[in-house]
Length: 76
Image (cartoon, rainbow, N blue to C red; front, side, top):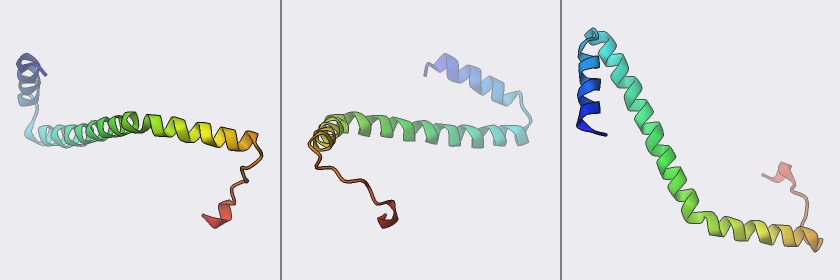
């Protein structure tokens, strides 16, 4: 983020009462943590995408060959 954007946010925050500033900080902290989780998930998914494609192709082939069995959800 550019220093101009941070300066703008700081000025906006300073114009608020302290109790509201604390609420905004809590919200931003949670929001940023959620964004970081999404970034990790996206990265993990991209790294494993070739394996997921391989597994999906194998499953499709096993279904076509009649080797797949219905999942018994009561055994989970």
